[in-house]
Amino acid sequence: MTDLTPFADLTVAVLLGGQSSEREVSFRSGDGVLGALGRLGLTAVGIDPGADLVAQLRDAGAGVVLSVLHGGCGENGAVQGLLDHAGIPYAGSGVLASALAMHKIQTKRILRAIGLPTPEWLTAGPGDDLGLVAAEAVETLGLPVVVKPVDEGSSVGVLIVDEAADVEAALAESVAKYREAFVDRFILGRELTVGVLGYGDGLHALPVLELVPKTRFYDYEAKYTKGLTDLLCPADIGDDATARVQAMAIEVHKAIGCHGVSRVDMHLDGDGQVWVHEINSIPGMTETSDVPAEATAAGMTYDDLVAEILASALPRMRAAGHGPLPPM
Ligand SMILES: Nc1ncnc2c1ncn2[C@@H]1O[C@H](COP(=O)(O)OP(=O)(O)O)[C@@H](O)[C@H]1O
Ligand SMILES: [Mg+2]
Image 1 (cartoon, rainbow, N blue to C red):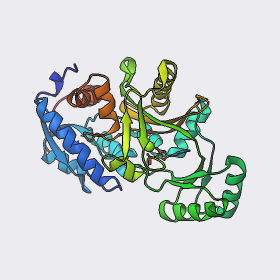
Image 2 (tube, rainbow, N blue to C red):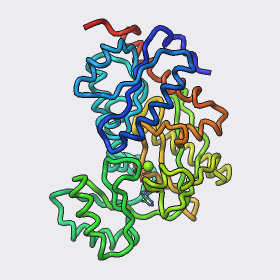
Image 3 (spheres, helix red, strand yellow):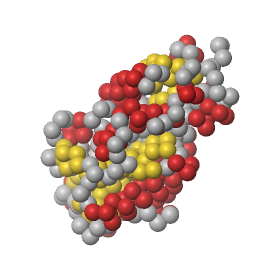
């Protein structure tokens, strides 16, 4: 059990909502986390960040922040930078790891540089000849291909394209909507995701979760519609694959520099090869989300999980002198 004594006299501000496409999911994550903090005997308040978040936190008497802002400025390091600048300690990943994790191409470049397997890709932005990118993608990656925005979440904007003739239009749509996009080699296999908790020597992977969507892939609908995806945890992939997938999740978490919590999304193909798609620095925390389901399989309650994530704020609290914020 995580020792929460250092948090006993503090108000924990849970950041929820935000301005990204994942605003609604974030409210659901926030509801879950606020409930847990209450059951853990802590004082907690939910805050939907406006333009002057620091003033909102001071008004609330916040001593520490736990953010479940998915996507956008909440997950890309911007909010973390604001909190660093204001000297407000928070749980979870810092600026650099958040920014890298949010940007799927930068994540993939790091994975490739250190020899971790991620599907081959081609980038596409506003200045590019998308016809040329599409032709090269079909030639080098084969069909189908996956077209994705670089920094969305919840499968928003992810397109699987079967026909060569449709790739350019998919890229044009993605670039028009999201500016930066990429084409990924399509991986046929089992969809796995693994949460990583802790920091420093205490890093540990949760049991592997297999997602079996009834839709073609794990799209937004499959993620958030009850009954559209079966969650199997621990995944029935054997001890060897389980160990490899968990070790890889920890390696990815370390390579990106995440702290406290992350979730690594992967595929296991028919040859037993693991492919890493992305790492999420603020994974979903709704009562039915992946990481809570993995925690349950590990024998942790939802409240234990929230307590362990919150405790990742301790190094920053020590650095900040560990107390409530001084008044303005
Ligand atoms: N290269 C790929 N091959 C097969 N499926 C993919 C590929 N990339 C993404 N997907 C599918 O799209 C989903 C969302 O992609 P992901 O990279 O995890 O982005 P996010 O979850 O941030 O939207 C994945 O869970 C998977 O189902
Ligand atoms: Mg994902």
